[in-house]
Image: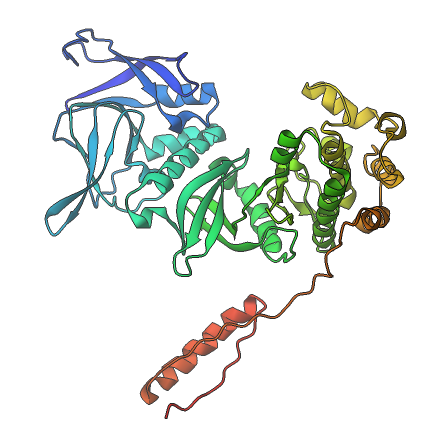
Length: 499
């Protein structure tokens, strides 16, 4: 490395939201390139790693980094080192080499906009590979200590880590870099305000899964993380055909991963967008399936808090799954981690006001969702947040008998009792809502599912051992049995003689 310099000026570029123009304050006696003889060279940086950050946060990050110049053949990162530096590449290329038995194995190339040595952001373990300059390179560097100090003052900056980790999980050529516990990430399939969703598979069973990663901004907030851990454990125990199944929860890379069943199909919001509005039988069918899932969730004291078409998944055969319990809370609680949690078009008044919520909050949001399915629009006009909040707080839904004259009476009653400003005027619980919808479902030929019953399942294993190993195995089996009991399962042992 031959040159260090400071960032003189950073400005947003008009090219992309994640592109920036940088002017470098370099030592006067140094000349950077033939075509940039000035002591203040400029660079155009485009890096998708910066896309999750608000503009001012990204600018502050770049201003705080140090400009560095590496010559062809220089080593940016040394395998086995714990030097806490990471880089963003401005210009030039480098290669990733793994060293084994004094031989280098090239496993990838990095170029402008890419990070290098980024694993220091997540742990202080030794680097797993060399990073060597393939050409002369201009980079921005920063220490982990500096990054942590910056992100402590501005937690939004932590989502830079989420973007960097996503890139590693998706593009890494090293299988171990793509693993989350016993699961392997294959591709990114979705992103929301609080999380990123990947597709993956169980490394041993080869079973497809969805892997939800909590954004680092939330995952690194100790207060939020404590609440999230407790709720995640509860949600993982939910077992209903209309609720997405959670298989596992893992904490890794300074964030939380939730492993769920992988679903084929599409979100309800996509169906509404494509169809404009659904047929009454289809809308009633979907609404009732949502009710069954919510009824089960509520019976376990869990309020979803974000019921909307974006959190309802419809599978090809028509089965509905409620997804994303990321904002879920206990009945009669207030979530202090959010100004008002939920999606603004569907949020009940009590959540906006910060009052304790119960199952009637989900009923309000479900009412608006059902209305949108049947009409193709929401029950209010206006698109500005202020006017939407005002409607939720002050204005009742218009009489649907006047505006939607062709609807069955049961739906008019459902809307009138679910989309009410005062929770006391709504259905008291999902069971009451189902009492309104069941007669209509029978008229329409919408078949209610059979009563959901838990069924015991069994896994068989054979343990082959020698007589002298019996004592050690007995201790192991006792520990294994105790761990099994913590999950609610039972270990049963039958002895066979091998003849």
